[in-house]
Image (tube, rainbow, N blue to C red; front, side, top):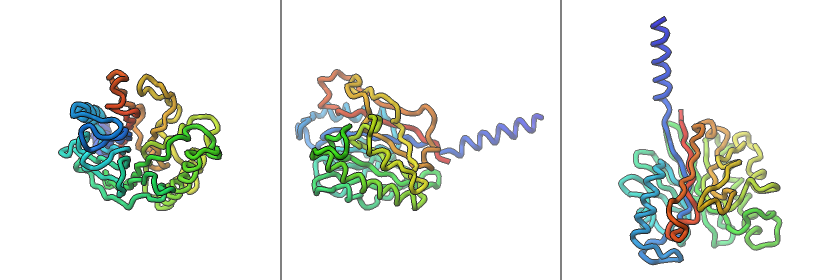
Length: 280
């Protein structure tokens, strides 16, 4: 009996050790420029330090970021001693990218340029990481703003552009699903998927191919950023059928700023959203 208990205990320890923990997040840092006093948010050194402190509080292994001008700007928030930094191949003040903790193997793939349907919109930053000998494809996105809950067929400039971006994103998702490599899409979708009648989410979550049966960690949750002024999330983390099995239960996090709203422009109008995975 003692041998059986000991064996069971050793198997449990081995099983627990076999899982690699990975915390992933998405964070739109709103007009993060390189220089002091530059851009609409005109941040000072203390503001960069405050954002860097929140990056430490977030303590994620992989952060998909949006609205960052350059790698140099990203280094002011994500310590180069802690993170490898990757950014989309486009010259613009509002770029997507990733901060990935040192020690994680990363390959930067070509940008998803098809999201730039007008010549002035963001690319998707596309990387492949390897954790526990498992390759995982990650895409950081920042879709067209202004069509948060309206019908995609609305006769507005924003909705027309977002509608054009949808098939480009769906093609990327379907290609990854066909390839059989687990994938996760993170970022500012600028879309409230929980609003009744939303057409965007059902289009990408159609289960065709099979691995394109998607799951989003924000589903059914209320946003708390800046006092919950907007109840529905537009920043999402979306998993394929394979990667969703790694989600640690009850590990969803939204890092809410403690400062008063007068510092909103110095921080961001978006709060970081994160979840922890156990990859076996």
